[in-house]
Image (tube, rainbow, N blue to C red):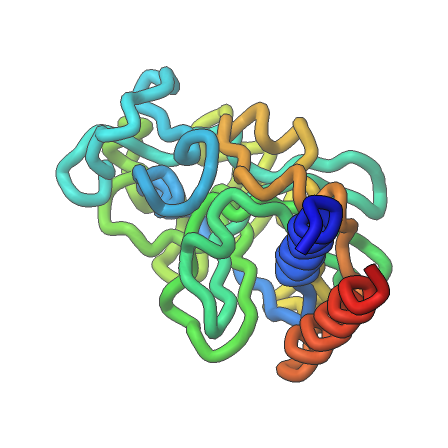
Length: 270
């Protein structure tokens, strides 16, 4: 066995491994969307949740960033959801934002800090899109792909975390599992949260459970500058591109088999 032959084996094996990895990162499908704003420290804000540069940033009651180890304000700690992790409008058909997500068959290490493009498929949002970063996890519905958008006043589920963070009555955030009842109610939220609350009624048109096609995309700096969290596999995703078609159970295996056949053929001809 020659040195050249061994080099060919190593090189082609590396290409095979890289191709398989990129194929798995290009994840897409159909999803339902909901909304939340509980003021709790984001679930992706803890250490070792995923292979990333650092966990999602969390803030204290003074809006200053806190140490990663700080406990959540929803359980006696002093770490809360930072106010700038709310949605904002880029133009009439595109917005940025953050979400708690759940993808059946996967765990937090698969989605924490990854970014997804949501192309809405139901009225009144048909034709509009968002790019969101997964800063949280939505465990309460685990039977479908789900993106729960972080929208101030969108759906309060915590008992008193928002009241403690902002020094207001919890009722200004609306009813449990519903949030505020009108755009006018946004005026009662802390001032820094009012733009995201109005986004729900303006750009989002107060849509209820809109459906969307989603695909993983490389995270834009507009989002990672706010969370400070970047996944270690972003470069591989950028090199491999993203997929617009939902993966099937047979596609990974057939892909690997095809790539392996190419490697074997190359080795036999060496």
